[in-house]
Image (cartoon, rainbow, N blue to C red; front, side, top):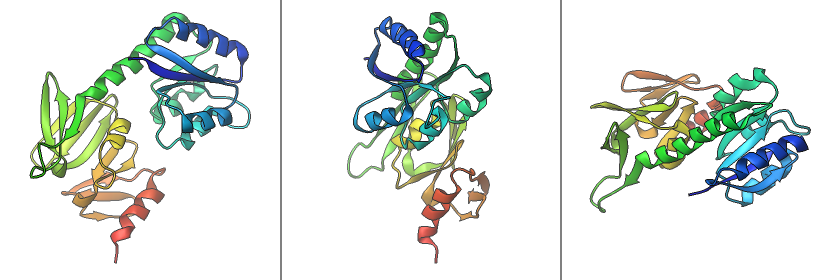
Length: 238
């Protein structure tokens, strides 16, 4: 299976280098190149894109600000000449950070991370065995697929490239990205309240402007999530 990718960079030479690298990898399909983020935004809204090679410092709109505008962003690899942006890139859950000039060897290493993550998406399967059974999820744990009922999940916590799923009875750890789970799980039942936490809405016992309480556990509300979280939880407030 090929990953459809685009290149967003205001430097023609940088685009040319990445185009040549992409052309050498059979599992990558280049579907567009853009000199600014605004043009890329319009394309991504109407076309299937699995991966963006994204420069950070660009006119009109930086790569970081552009990424923040995408509601359900594809995988992103930052490409930049400025090392100081690395930390912010990882906070935005990008797949990797390539420092220019980019060698083909380093490019391949970065792409391998994306391919590995795409394979890991198969480690979660949401389903039901019929109308009488509650919806459930299979998580890959070691070499087994472990069944967890959606109604049993309390908290999902991100730990680097893994997530910890907590229920009343147990905890499991699986190799997965929390951003993928956020979009895979039903949004009417689960809410992301922090870049490291997703919670089951109906399991929340209490909340404030800074945290929620679930089964005597206190989970922080992230600064960037606060407005949406409070608005969502306040819908049932008397």
